[in-house]
Amino acid sequence: MAIAGLLLALGVSARGGFRPSRSSDTFATSCELNPPREAAALERCLALQPRDVELMLDLGAIYEADARIDRAEALYRQALTVDPKDGDVHVRLGRLLLQRGDRTAAALEARTALGFQSRSPRALDLLAASKHGVEQ
Image (cartoon, rainbow, N blue to C red; front, side, top):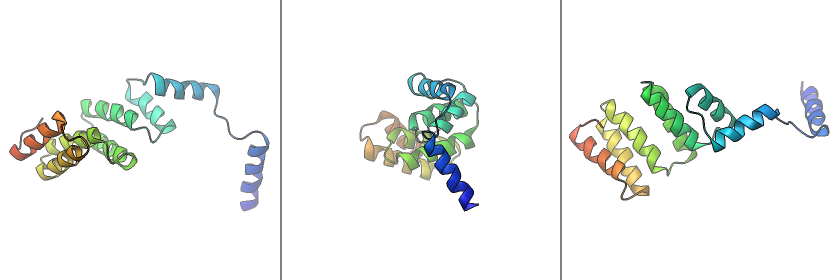
């Protein structure tokens, strides 16, 4: 089995390495320059660019609009593994947590966002809402 893997690797490198198809290249470029607005297409973009936080935010917003809150939350948490200092992601996650009634976690996300964006109106609104139990 190891020999077959080695031979495959040598064969790929001898032919110039793996090259995605041109249609894949075109789609990846469109993901970057003009991201699609549909969930399925954004999911494809994210599969090609799994560390693109902007794609995650775009897709998360669609999930939220479609009331797929669990998927949006998972995506925002994934985005924070890529960029834990992104205040916008902390605010989005905090808003979802507040919708679920977890005011403590929402306040924590708001405070974390304010640590990176000290005057963020969205983070300040989230913090105030979490103290008063008001959904945004």
